[in-house]
Length: 115
Image 1: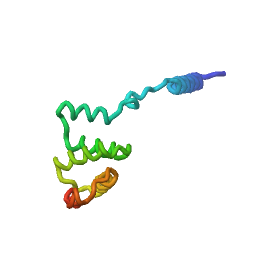
Image 2: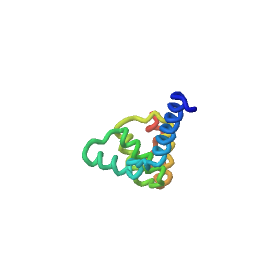
Image 3: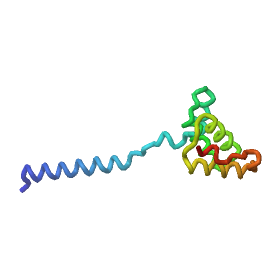
């Protein structure tokens, strides 16, 4: 004989199972996966809202994409706006300079951007 408690437990179990199964069938769309952040940041700079934070993001993005010419331009813009205290960023800048074949004679004070 089925009691009210057993019936309620069965109903609760069936409800939770149905809800869980229906949630797994929903296809969640990630709206941010197709956004190219570099293009967004470049558009922001083009509209006149560039900040050192954005210049840093652009420089490192191009550095990791191995587009050193563009990375160098953004590093130079960044360092013209603020002094760098991040040794990792300084290393990326130095590697970028080497990659685009800018010699130390063109930039005699390598450590000036570290201060």
